[in-house]
Image (tube, rainbow, N blue to C red; front, side, top):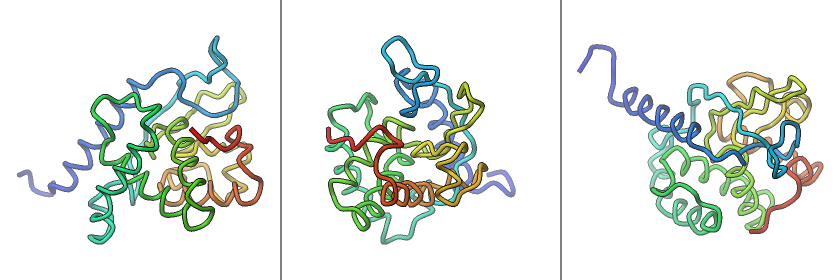
Length: 194
């Protein structure tokens, strides 16, 4: 072991690299409901940058009690995403942690149906990767994190700033839930039921 390098930092680096690889392999349908730069099918084009994973993105950053819930969360996420799942080996750990935050926040604030819709939306927006930023919008704005909160308005409305703090998965999920409570599902094109 190299001095100053922990197993946890190596694991975080491996997971961040895996997340970056997933982003490069994502289909072109990934993106926001904003149709700027859409492909011929009307789906937004893939244009993302990955930044370092923030606190709360990895299983090792959760309490032991929360870590014990991750297998159930993975089963829930697999069931909800089954119709659209395009990762042959299932979800990565970082994606399961993102699903954990989504289920916990949305079920508590808006109910089970909202949690499932939020999971589907986050899958469409970021593939449940909390560290992605769409920095290729034609209007010069950027979209941040799990729910791709736009720094042209929705990010600030939710109390965020256009920096890496917007990539903290729990914060991003809470901000999206707050937006939905206040203005509805419109920023994401409506509630996704299947």
